[in-house]
Image (tube, rainbow, N blue to C red; front, side, top):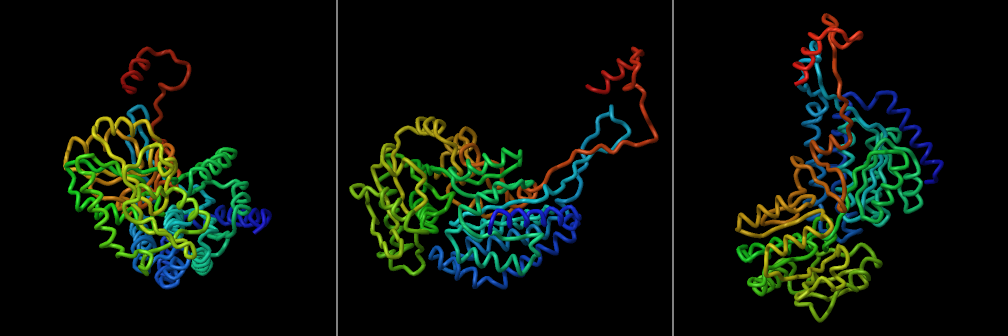
Length: 460
């Protein structure tokens, strides 16, 4: 799609939004119901597309993509009426007699730019929130997951007219053309580098944005942890989607006294979950493309591999790989891994570890496996990160009851459930002043000392 075609599409959406068609709550719920039905209808095609793009099994596709989308849409269908209502707030005595409230209203014309690693979930989830909040939307799927993009386009074109919700496919040219336009709100999920570019463009138009980025998310395993359970859960979260998960544990910080036991249990869990030969496991996926496959291969130090390291270039596959005795200077620690490589670093002092983490970029997620309440409390209160888990990984994003998002270098803003509705809404503060009483103290001339004393009383 050319820049002129994108501009014309956005103009149609502006006209549609100005008509007021998207604002009624009944309309919003009807559109969510249509979207829910379409996702159910095309569930098999969605799963097939994800298998083609990322090698995901149908089970994993439902568990991590289409199933979560259905859950989010269902949540918004049930709660949109409540979320869209005005919220009464306290009215100061000085504003007597009046009624004060906050009214959520749609931003208007929104842009949703989604990534390739969870191409269905991270496209349709924010779209459901945008619809619930009463916006129009232009959706831009990633060019790296083309088969899923086709299914997304099919579903959206079947459910909605393009002046309401439309899909723009393509690559960098289309991304640039979209960012040149003035939207009322932009929702972006992807890398930090592209996120900075998105924010530069939105800043030109003073357009609010939510950025869901990533980073090196640490996972702490201290001496009090249940090592067997920790290894089992970490292996699941780290190698899910071949490590191509923004909230996957990027690296492990393991207390030295339990490190050997943790490594041994991790090796055991990889074999239990993926088999002796993971590259022959039909449910084990692949790296999205050759570029990322080659990058990941360059991060593997074979001298430090304790399990894995096998590659299959013809299918862009890398076996679940664990590297021990890793240091901060190793290549694998120089960037977000975003692949099936688990570096293990050791520590002796928990205090020193917390202090070092305070000096690093703020990650999207942080995890701690521990039975030490003091350690857990310090991680939860002293460190800044988007979100996380205690004695588990990844699962904090799989709920509509909590917002999900980053902080600092890992992003800004959050979504899911109520937070998603709020992300796509502006809250107007409104005072409804009554006509039957008009206090004279605010009007000139300011002569009465009595009024001055009364004003001080009212404003306390």
